[in-house]
Length: 305
Ligand SMILES: [Zn+2]
Image (cartoon, rainbow, N blue to C red; front, side):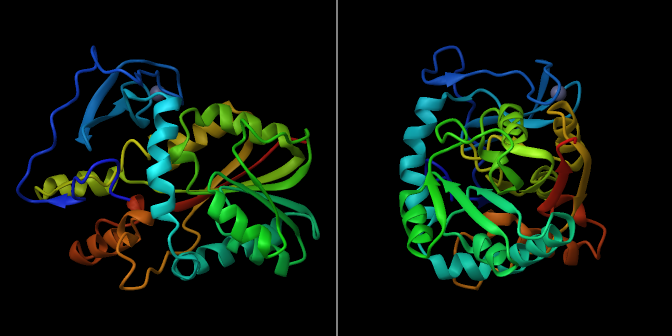
């Protein structure tokens, strides 16, 4: 998960790459803030030669400009197979987060309801929901992952919210683990999710929050590519995801930790998958002063009845 080039995640020596020439860059687009619509921005960092900016109005952090959707699709062809190389490591890594989320859903959604996991990967979260008596289905853009989940008896579809046809109001619960940070237009995605949820339906998102970590590392003079652009396009704080959910028409947005990922020692990219290790290291190094803001968290919300 080091991105499209070989830029290391951390470096004490090399400065950040120079900003690309926006005027002449092809296959790139500039966007306004997805949360509030403003277009004034300030530069936060340049990583993997992409500009990471904060909205001057609401503070939402995003990559701008970024590859257009066609260019992005090409970049992902080289990204996904690498990311999904080992099902067992992935399961170990996510186990606590998945079981905590499943328990939360079992408490808050009707027994035996239908769950759609968008970005389901190998389907390990679907296992958790099936064990709790839910009708679990999924969707993913990785052919390998969809094949693996389908072989284990899950109704899993290949594609995205834009390409897979789903009926209005057809799910009691939708989950998205580490998905919304990758999506070019998260507001549009949340509107699509609201459409396929039944009235009163429940949404659970899990999102990384990298900005506090990047700021802390910058104080220590450590360059990094933790935003992982252009694969991560958005960096949500608890405040920005709450505003976006409200804008999309969801109610009762609530953010909580929801467990910490536990990567095995040999999972080399673990550090970028959830930023949990860095957050833990910073927490220890700072004697607890740099704590929860940088940790990946869950946010839940409801579609109004
Ligand atoms: Zn904004």
